[in-house]
Image (spheres, helix red, strand yellow):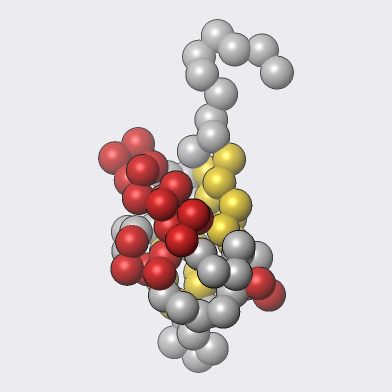
Length: 72
């Protein structure tokens, strides 16, 4: 799983940081989200999906990795 954020859509609610602090943090200067780990470990994938669902600005984009042997 990969995660990206659109900082211009971030409204600094902090839901992502509270939900997945190992992946997201808020910039101390402007309070906007930053990604600490763009390649999400499997153990944090559910938290990252929840953070994306909870984001009021829709600033979080999650891309699932392809399953082994799958052709795109």
